[in-house]
Length: 256
Image (cartoon, rainbow, N blue to C red):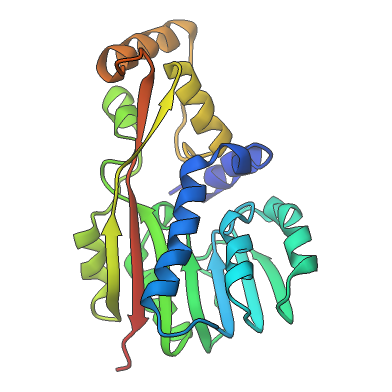
Protein backbone atom coordinates (compact mmCIF):
# COMPACT_ATOMS: atom_id res chain seq x y z
CA UNK A 1 0.00 0.00 0.00
CA UNK A 2 1.14 3.53 -0.77
CA UNK A 3 0.28 4.99 2.63
CA UNK A 4 1.45 8.46 1.59
CA UNK A 5 -0.96 8.48 -1.35
CA UNK A 6 -3.80 7.14 0.81
CA UNK A 7 -3.24 9.92 3.34
CA UNK A 8 -3.15 12.51 0.56
CA UNK A 9 -6.45 11.32 -0.98
CA UNK A 10 -8.28 11.22 2.34
CA UNK A 11 -6.88 14.61 3.33
CA UNK A 12 -8.29 16.06 0.10
CA UNK A 13 -11.69 14.51 0.86
CA UNK A 14 -11.84 15.59 4.50
CA UNK A 15 -14.23 18.49 3.86
CA UNK A 16 -16.76 16.34 1.96
CA UNK A 17 -16.34 12.93 3.63
CA UNK A 18 -18.83 13.22 6.48
CA UNK A 19 -21.67 14.41 4.24
CA UNK A 20 -21.08 11.89 1.42
CA UNK A 21 -19.94 8.71 3.24
CA UNK A 22 -23.47 7.30 3.45
CA UNK A 23 -22.44 3.66 3.81
CA UNK A 24 -19.83 4.53 6.43
CA UNK A 25 -22.52 6.16 8.58
CA UNK A 26 -24.61 2.98 8.33
CA UNK A 27 -21.59 0.83 9.20
CA UNK A 28 -20.67 2.93 12.25
CA UNK A 29 -24.20 2.72 13.66
CA UNK A 30 -24.32 -1.02 13.06
CA UNK A 31 -20.93 -1.58 14.72
CA UNK A 32 -22.21 0.06 17.89
CA UNK A 33 -25.31 -2.17 17.89
CA UNK A 34 -23.11 -5.25 17.47
CA UNK A 35 -20.82 -4.16 20.30
CA UNK A 36 -23.76 -3.64 22.62
CA UNK A 37 -25.22 -7.02 21.67
CA UNK A 38 -22.15 -9.24 21.60
CA UNK A 39 -19.75 -7.97 24.28
CA UNK A 40 -19.95 -8.58 28.00
CA UNK A 41 -19.00 -5.00 28.84
CA UNK A 42 -21.24 -1.99 28.38
CA UNK A 43 -18.63 0.34 29.85
CA UNK A 44 -15.16 -0.11 28.36
CA UNK A 45 -12.67 1.85 30.45
CA UNK A 46 -9.92 2.26 27.85
CA UNK A 47 -10.74 2.46 24.13
CA UNK A 48 -8.55 2.86 21.04
CA UNK A 49 -10.10 3.69 17.67
CA UNK A 50 -7.75 3.39 14.70
CA UNK A 51 -8.61 5.04 11.39
CA UNK A 52 -10.99 7.49 13.02
CA UNK A 53 -11.18 9.82 10.00
CA UNK A 54 -13.53 12.76 10.54
CA UNK A 55 -15.05 11.10 13.61
CA UNK A 56 -18.28 9.52 12.34
CA UNK A 57 -17.74 6.42 14.51
CA UNK A 58 -15.88 8.34 17.25
CA UNK A 59 -18.91 10.45 18.09
CA UNK A 60 -21.15 7.40 18.52
CA UNK A 61 -18.53 5.68 20.66
CA UNK A 62 -18.57 8.69 22.97
CA UNK A 63 -22.35 8.68 23.17
CA UNK A 64 -22.67 4.98 24.01
CA UNK A 65 -19.61 4.23 26.17
CA UNK A 66 -18.23 6.23 29.06
CA UNK A 67 -14.59 5.22 29.08
CA UNK A 68 -11.86 6.78 31.16
CA UNK A 69 -9.63 7.13 28.09
CA UNK A 70 -10.31 7.30 24.37
CA UNK A 71 -7.35 7.31 21.98
CA UNK A 72 -8.25 8.33 18.43
CA UNK A 73 -5.80 7.51 15.65
CA UNK A 74 -5.69 8.30 11.95
CA UNK A 75 -3.10 8.16 9.20
CA UNK A 76 -3.89 11.78 8.26
CA UNK A 77 -2.77 14.47 10.75
CA UNK A 78 -5.33 16.87 9.24
CA UNK A 79 -8.17 14.81 10.70
CA UNK A 80 -7.43 16.19 14.17
CA UNK A 81 -9.11 19.46 13.19
CA UNK A 82 -12.40 17.62 12.65
CA UNK A 83 -12.20 16.06 16.09
CA UNK A 84 -11.71 19.25 18.09
CA UNK A 85 -15.36 19.58 19.11
CA UNK A 86 -15.76 15.96 20.29
CA UNK A 87 -12.35 16.13 21.94
CA UNK A 88 -13.31 19.26 23.84
CA UNK A 89 -16.84 18.21 24.80
CA UNK A 90 -16.26 14.52 25.50
CA UNK A 91 -17.34 13.11 28.83
CA UNK A 92 -14.26 10.90 29.03
CA UNK A 93 -11.56 12.02 31.44
CA UNK A 94 -8.88 11.73 28.74
CA UNK A 95 -9.38 11.90 24.97
CA UNK A 96 -6.37 12.12 22.69
CA UNK A 97 -5.57 12.08 18.98
CA UNK A 98 -2.42 10.56 17.55
CA UNK A 99 -1.53 10.65 13.84
CA UNK A 100 0.30 7.75 12.23
CA UNK A 101 0.09 4.34 10.61
CA UNK A 102 -1.84 2.06 12.95
CA UNK A 103 0.13 -0.93 11.68
CA UNK A 104 3.24 0.54 13.28
CA UNK A 105 1.98 2.43 16.31
CA UNK A 106 2.12 1.09 19.85
CA UNK A 107 -1.24 1.43 21.56
CA UNK A 108 -1.49 1.59 25.36
CA UNK A 109 -1.21 -1.75 27.11
CA UNK A 110 -4.28 -2.75 29.09
CA UNK A 111 -6.70 -1.38 26.47
CA UNK A 112 -10.20 -2.86 26.83
CA UNK A 113 -11.40 -2.26 23.27
CA UNK A 114 -9.53 -1.69 20.00
CA UNK A 115 -12.05 -0.81 17.34
CA UNK A 116 -12.47 0.69 13.89
CA UNK A 117 -14.87 1.12 11.00
CA UNK A 118 -13.94 0.90 7.31
CA UNK A 119 -10.16 0.99 7.75
CA UNK A 120 -8.60 -2.48 7.76
CA UNK A 121 -8.86 -2.84 3.95
CA UNK A 122 -5.99 -0.31 3.67
CA UNK A 123 -3.57 -2.43 5.74
CA UNK A 124 -0.53 -4.20 4.32
CA UNK A 125 -0.60 -7.11 6.79
CA UNK A 126 -3.84 -7.53 8.77
CA UNK A 127 -2.65 -10.68 10.52
CA UNK A 128 0.48 -8.98 11.89
CA UNK A 129 -1.77 -6.18 13.11
CA UNK A 130 -4.04 -8.69 14.89
CA UNK A 131 -1.01 -10.14 16.66
CA UNK A 132 0.02 -6.67 17.85
CA UNK A 133 -3.52 -5.85 19.02
CA UNK A 134 -3.58 -9.00 21.12
CA UNK A 135 -0.49 -7.73 22.95
CA UNK A 136 -2.06 -4.35 23.72
CA UNK A 137 -5.41 -5.65 24.97
CA UNK A 138 -6.22 -6.36 28.58
CA UNK A 139 -7.38 -9.79 29.71
CA UNK A 140 -10.68 -10.50 27.96
CA UNK A 141 -10.24 -7.33 25.87
CA UNK A 142 -12.07 -6.98 22.57
CA UNK A 143 -11.11 -6.24 18.99
CA UNK A 144 -14.11 -5.02 16.97
CA UNK A 145 -13.86 -3.78 13.41
CA UNK A 146 -15.53 -3.53 10.05
CA UNK A 147 -13.83 -3.82 6.69
CA UNK A 148 -14.97 -4.62 3.15
CA UNK A 149 -15.31 -7.91 1.28
CA UNK A 150 -14.51 -9.09 -2.22
CA UNK A 151 -17.60 -7.64 -3.91
CA UNK A 152 -16.88 -4.13 -2.66
CA UNK A 153 -16.98 -1.53 -5.47
CA UNK A 154 -17.17 -4.45 -7.90
CA UNK A 155 -18.52 -2.22 -10.67
CA UNK A 156 -15.39 -0.04 -10.62
CA UNK A 157 -13.01 -2.99 -10.55
CA UNK A 158 -14.76 -4.81 -13.39
CA UNK A 159 -14.67 -1.77 -15.66
CA UNK A 160 -11.25 -0.33 -14.78
CA UNK A 161 -9.34 -3.33 -13.47
CA UNK A 162 -8.35 -1.24 -10.46
CA UNK A 163 -9.21 -1.76 -6.81
CA UNK A 164 -8.06 -3.24 -3.53
CA UNK A 165 -7.54 -6.95 -2.91
CA UNK A 166 -10.18 -7.59 -0.27
CA UNK A 167 -10.33 -10.52 2.18
CA UNK A 168 -13.32 -12.77 2.66
CA UNK A 169 -14.81 -13.30 6.11
CA UNK A 170 -13.37 -16.83 6.02
CA UNK A 171 -9.86 -15.53 5.36
CA UNK A 172 -10.09 -12.95 8.13
CA UNK A 173 -11.53 -15.54 10.53
CA UNK A 174 -8.53 -17.76 9.83
CA UNK A 175 -6.11 -14.88 10.53
CA UNK A 176 -7.86 -14.02 13.78
CA UNK A 177 -8.42 -17.52 15.16
CA UNK A 178 -5.02 -18.13 16.82
CA UNK A 179 -5.26 -14.90 18.83
CA UNK A 180 -8.98 -14.13 19.19
CA UNK A 181 -12.25 -15.89 19.75
CA UNK A 182 -14.54 -14.60 17.04
CA UNK A 183 -17.76 -13.87 18.91
CA UNK A 184 -19.65 -12.60 15.90
CA UNK A 185 -19.00 -12.00 12.22
CA UNK A 186 -21.32 -11.13 9.37
CA UNK A 187 -21.34 -9.49 5.98
CA UNK A 188 -23.87 -7.67 3.85
CA UNK A 189 -24.27 -6.06 0.45
CA UNK A 190 -25.39 -2.46 0.27
CA UNK A 191 -26.09 -0.62 -2.97
CA UNK A 192 -26.10 3.13 -3.51
CA UNK A 193 -28.04 4.51 -6.47
CA UNK A 194 -26.77 7.46 -8.50
CA UNK A 195 -28.16 9.49 -11.37
CA UNK A 196 -25.15 8.77 -13.57
CA UNK A 197 -21.70 7.13 -13.63
CA UNK A 198 -20.19 10.61 -13.31
CA UNK A 199 -21.98 10.99 -9.97
CA UNK A 200 -20.46 7.66 -8.91
CA UNK A 201 -17.00 9.05 -9.59
CA UNK A 202 -17.77 12.23 -7.68
CA UNK A 203 -18.95 10.13 -4.73
CA UNK A 204 -15.73 8.12 -4.73
CA UNK A 205 -13.61 11.25 -4.97
CA UNK A 206 -15.48 13.00 -2.16
CA UNK A 207 -15.06 10.02 0.18
CA UNK A 208 -11.42 9.34 -0.72
CA UNK A 209 -12.02 5.62 -1.14
CA UNK A 210 -9.94 5.38 -4.34
CA UNK A 211 -6.88 6.22 -2.28
CA UNK A 212 -4.45 3.80 -3.96
CA UNK A 213 -5.23 4.56 -7.59
CA UNK A 214 -3.21 6.64 -10.04
CA UNK A 215 -5.70 7.54 -12.77
CA UNK A 216 -5.99 10.32 -15.33
CA UNK A 217 -9.49 10.82 -16.67
CA UNK A 218 -9.30 12.11 -20.23
CA UNK A 219 -12.53 13.14 -21.91
CA UNK A 220 -12.60 10.06 -24.13
CA UNK A 221 -11.81 7.71 -21.22
CA UNK A 222 -14.52 9.32 -19.11
CA UNK A 223 -17.06 8.95 -21.90
CA UNK A 224 -16.14 5.32 -22.48
CA UNK A 225 -16.37 4.56 -18.75
CA UNK A 226 -19.76 6.27 -18.53
CA UNK A 227 -21.13 4.34 -21.50
CA UNK A 228 -19.91 0.99 -20.21
CA UNK A 229 -21.11 1.66 -16.66
CA UNK A 230 -24.58 2.59 -17.91
CA UNK A 231 -24.75 -0.48 -20.13
CA UNK A 232 -23.68 -2.88 -17.38
CA UNK A 233 -25.23 -1.42 -14.22
CA UNK A 234 -28.25 0.70 -15.13
CA UNK A 235 -31.39 0.29 -13.03
CA UNK A 236 -35.01 0.26 -14.25
CA UNK A 237 -35.23 4.02 -13.62
CA UNK A 238 -32.10 4.63 -15.76
CA UNK A 239 -29.99 5.32 -12.69
CA UNK A 240 -26.89 3.27 -11.81
CA UNK A 241 -25.76 1.33 -8.77
CA UNK A 242 -22.56 1.10 -6.75
CA UNK A 243 -22.04 -1.89 -4.46
CA UNK A 244 -20.52 -1.88 -1.00
CA UNK A 245 -19.71 -5.12 0.84
CA UNK A 246 -19.21 -4.46 4.58
CA UNK A 247 -17.85 -7.20 6.86
CA UNK A 248 -18.16 -7.01 10.67
CA UNK A 249 -16.13 -8.77 13.37
CA UNK A 250 -16.48 -8.80 17.16
CA UNK A 251 -13.58 -10.70 18.75
CA UNK A 252 -12.40 -11.45 22.29
CA UNK A 253 -8.74 -11.90 23.11
CA UNK A 254 -7.54 -15.43 23.72
CA UNK A 255 -5.42 -15.70 26.86
CA UNK A 256 -2.55 -18.02 26.08
